[in-house]
Length: 82
Image (cartoon, rainbow, N blue to C red; front, side):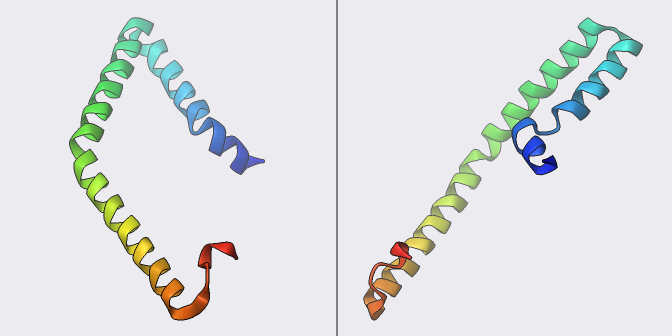
């Protein structure tokens, strides 16, 4: 059940507690602003790293395709049918 909760809810409950604690000390508008700024910075960081992540993913896909082709040529038939 815990894995299910973390999978679908992530760490939202923990973040909510932290946001509530911060809002109580510095105010709701400031807390929401900080959260928005953090989201924008995270998005910019992801956008900056995306080309290298995409290149790595393409390399993994090519490697997997090559391995499947090798198995198929070795007479294993369709390796994805198992």
